[in-house]
Amino acid sequence: MFLKSFRKIPKKINLRLALLYTLVFILSSALLFGFIYLFFYSTLKKDDYRSIQQKLLELWASYEYGGLQAVKNQVSVEKYLGDRRFALIRVADRYENTLIVILPERWRSLSLESIQEIYSNQDRSVVRVEAGGMLYNIETASLRLADGNLLQVGMNVEARVFALKRFREIFALVLIPFALMSFAGGAALAARALRPLGSLNRTIRTVIETGNIQTRIPATGATGELDGLIRLFNRMLDRVQRLVGGMTDALDSVAHDLKTPLARMKMSAEAALQSPDDTVQLAKAVTDGLEEVEGMRSLLNALLDISEAETGVMRLDLVPVDLSGVVGDMAELYRYLAEEKSITLSVEAPETLVVQADLTRLRQVLANLLDNALKYTGPGGAVLAVVSKDDRYATVGVRDNGVGITPEEHKLVWQRHYRGRSGGSSAGLGLGLGVVKAIVEAHHGFVSITSTQGEGSEFSFSLPLNA
Image 1 (tube, rainbow, N blue to C red):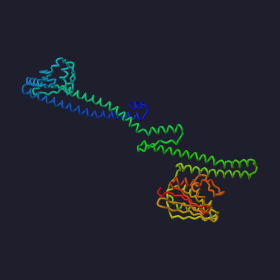
Image 2 (cartoon, helix red, strand yellow):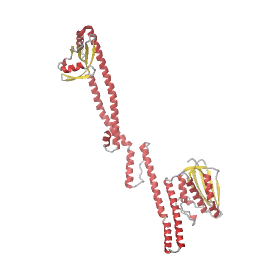
Image 3 (cartoon, rainbow, N blue to C red):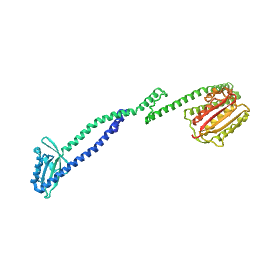
Image 4 (cartoon, helix red, strand yellow):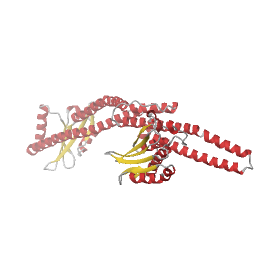
């Protein structure tokens, strides 16, 4: 029932938190009040009980000494001395017939039924009676005398009832302003604590409504959980922006780079259609189409690899890999191509050098570097793959004595579609080194280049040893 009512509250989380805070405060205060009230009540009740028991013993002693007359005399003396706490003194025989009853003067108008109710109360409960226009709270106790008669004492506990009532009133008066203060304080604290959540809400709405993913939530520099959420959200937006940017660049590149091969395929097909009986022309059109499809497949794969690595979504199957062994295997694979061009291909590497890497991607990097070195090295040249390490990184350098590149091109060669000025008419998509850089950086490594135009180049990549 409470939860249903709570859900109807306006859906502002700071208001709900303030109400919950106030509710917790009220419940805690009520629990504390209950404990204090019970302690206060039991203490006063015990004091009254001791007073009644003491009075019973005093009257019992007087009765044993002088009978009913001694009891009357003692009560008269107490009234004279101003002790009016005890409103009823009664002695009854074993058959409950009243032998003597002493009541206050103001109780003369008390009905017989009310007096009888006081007489019959022997369980120490409080009886409320009205006399002379006033309400009294009487608690009774009784004692069986030696001759079988019953001695009964009724004590006016109005002081106790009044004290407990005042205690309840004071608690209620104190609780109300404190509850209001707790609500105001809870609302202020909730508003302050949830301020980052408000910024997050506004930023999300802005991104949804405008599509501007460059929007960021200002960092507060705090260390709370909500501030951590803000930082994570900003990082997520950075990641989304990189993904969208990579996707856009990839689509632009695909749209640009597929125009030429598609145009060539169209021209070849149209030429074949103009000579439907020329089997040689048809075969050439099919062959050209397959070559163009293979080129487009390579282009798409390279662009996807670069985009995945640059946006941080490339999946790597990291396993322990012997870098020296992989370099040796890849050099052996390209040795036939080197021999065709009369190029010497050799490897310098330690016996074993283990790194954490994706074996397939690592072979792709080495294939691009070796292919690039052989492509730009003339007949009679040499290509050397060197594997080394320091305290933090394992490095592979592919060195050639080919055409080299100019210093201003050192940074440009890693960009997609860039081909060096010294490349001449060498075939290629201009994506090989871009793929190398993307894959190496996905492994948390880095690439570098050393080159002198006309003397050769060395392309290197480094992978962390403790990845």
